[in-house]
Length: 120
Image (tube, rainbow, N blue to C red; front, side):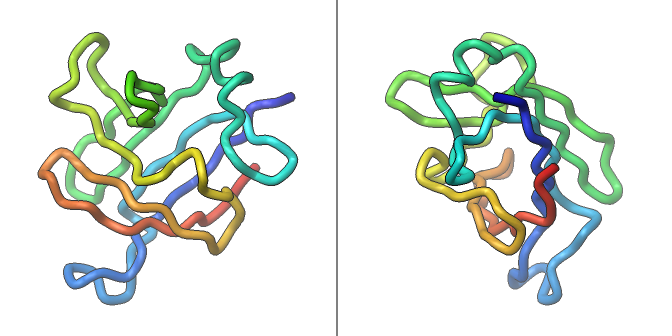
């Protein structure tokens, strides 16, 4: 098992009708053969499962991919603090391949769609 780097870019939305490659996330996570998050491998490599949020006009944020109680996955930027967490809708059921979509509820409470731009 190796960690994969997944790049998510903002998909089409009201705010960005054409989407945006300058707004998104890059994160590292273990994927199974089907392209889904491998939760067992994540347990062994949780400190290596990092995330970088990039947003045009704002400083990058760095954190971790975290599996919380209640079986939710979040991007978390401040250890032991939940107010900064960004929940990822049905994350464990997503297939991470270019062209697929995932929704993330960001700091402002708005859920936005992101497109998988690359998996390497």
